[in-house]
Image (cartoon, rainbow, N blue to C red; front, top):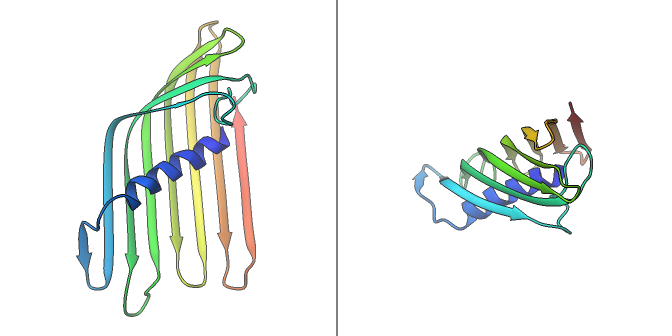
Amino acid sequence: MKRLIATVAALGSVFLMALPAQAQGAGAISVTQTFHNAVQTFAPPDPNAVQPCTGVPGTLTITFNGVAHFTVLTSGVGAGTGWATFTATGTFAFAGSDGVNFSGRFTAWDGENFNLQNSAATAILVIHGTGTDGSSLTFRDVAHFSVSASGMTVSFDKPTCG
């Protein structure tokens, strides 16, 4: 499921890069993309096609609304500095290979900032669902990656269930 964060972030980036600049200011380019009722399906062997708390494989389908925004300074002081954020919320259906299916809601967010010396990215995923056997699914994941001007890298991924 932690790869779902990366997939959602990548999906946001794809939407961003597929668009021409919508607003230009003094040396800045900004792009915003919204999407409604987007659908994506993950099936084995895709690493997102697992129940995140048990590891049971299955087929995951998400339907979501979201917004992605990207700004980069292109000239002058701060050229090469940029910010990006992506938020999506929606529903999911997971058909587990063990016969237990889950449905529920999720929210995903990620944010990045960078300049010519540093970069940082953080992503959060929250899932709440109910299984056909009456069980509950609560999953949270926080992932972070940063690189300092000296090249020091910090990264972590903290998934939790329950």
